[in-house]
Structure formats: structure tokens, C-alpha cells
Length: 315
Image (cartoon, rainbow, N blue to C red; front, top):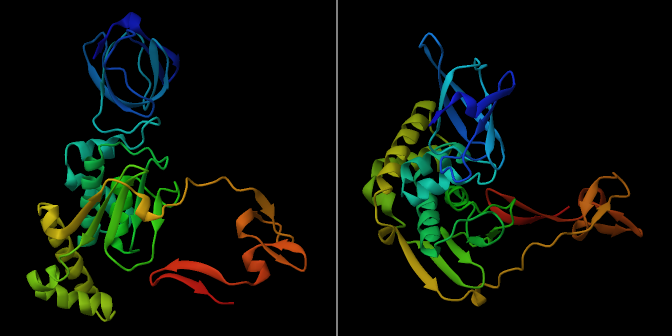
């Protein structure tokens, strides 16, 4: 968008204050990346990047990477798919809306560390579930995912749905099944259960043998590990185009009462351990000799989620 010289000013060496009309539909959001083009009196064009740091009724401020000269002709363009503070999932939601599974899988790879078939399956399930529920998840327990495995599949689910342990929208039940139920609280639930159990073994027998050696038996060489990663990526990307109905048994229910869901996460009172003096959520304290202690200091059993699932660790 072209901006007249009287529509912008510098408030600091690298800060621009751009005036806009109240109904301007190009007005960005905080956090958006902006490409700024300037043309000086010698007709020389220069490009620099900026970030929106403040929004007002009739203006917004941009922090630029380089200082902009006064009295120059200025144009700006909001770059595609840049998140804002108000909606940090904007880029991911755009990918979901446009069914851009490839970019979603790349985002999931950032979280998971690599791209593999199960991560892709988690992404596909998350996208399909959100589309069927017709909702934009905001991380406020409006959408819940009940996950039945702690495998790679769960990372694809978390990335695509935005439901995580941290925002209390991910519930883990240690069933050991590649399955997940995407839930709109008190309204509707959709369960996806992976049914193509022998897909890789039957369609890619050599890759299956390599997986058995490298991952299951931990006997693969460095070269074989790289070979498996390459084959994994190839299979993963091929699954992007497979209809989800071929891969999963899908069951939709018009109520959620059968799922025995917890209420929204409570805010617990804080306590302090009498021994180490560290702060603890009240329900996780123990009483020893009449004194409040944390689990480690009281040397009591605790629950741990690791690669083998959820288990009690006996002290």
C-alpha cells in the first residue's frame, strides 16, 4: 500500500508511525511482518523489513530493521502467513483452511524433530477433526483431544489442533492405541482409530525390515539410520494424499457424556515444601510427620510418562 508523506512519521530512529483510515482493510496486527519499500528524492528504491509493535485506532507502529529516511515515498506490504500476538496460530489456521498439509507437516517436523509417517497421520487427523467441528481452537479448552498413545502420532495431533498438556486441552489415556478423539466440549466428539496396521509392512517391506533393525533392535549403522529417515520421509509425504477414511476408522457421536471428561482445569492453591522450600501445587503435596513436603523430599511413589507409557515409579 502506498503511503503519502504526510501519513507517516518517525517517532524513533527505527520506528515508523503510519496513519490509516478507520475502515482500512489493510491494517495489520501486532507481530505481523511488513515489507517496506522506500524511494528517495534521487528515485532510488530500498527495501527493508519491519514488525508491527503497536496498533491504535487510526495508526500503527512498525519497528524497522534499518532506519528510514525522512521525506521519502513509502509503501508497505504485509507478508503472508505471519502470526500476530492476538492470534499466534494464524499461520497454522490458514494452512488448515487451505488444506495445505505439506506446510503443516513441515511445522510438525519442527516440533517433533523429524518427519515420519505417524507425524503425518496425526496432522491429518487433527485437520480433519477441526474442519468437521468447524472451530478455530484458541487454546482455552474449547476443543479437547483425548489421545491414546504417546507415539509420534501425538505430536502431529498437538501441532495441528493446538491442544497440548500445557493448555490443559490434551488428555492422555495410556491405552497404547494409535487413536485420538477430538471433542467440542459438551457437544460432539469424533474418534479416529488407525486401521491400516500392516500398511508399511505390506507396501514397503524393505523399509519395514530397516525399521526393525534400526529402531526396534537398535542395531543399525549411521548409514542405515539416514536411509531409514529418507524412506520415512518419502512414505510420510505419500500418505498426505491418501483419503483419511482409508487409514482410520472414524466414529462421530453427538454427545460427549460417554467419555467421562474432566471439568475445565482448576486453579490450585500454592504450597511450599517444608524441606526444600520449593513451591508446589497443593494436590501434589504429601504430609510427613505433620509437615508439608513435595514428592521427592517425602520419598513417595510418583507417576511418570516416558517412552513406555504412564507408570508408577516405586521409591
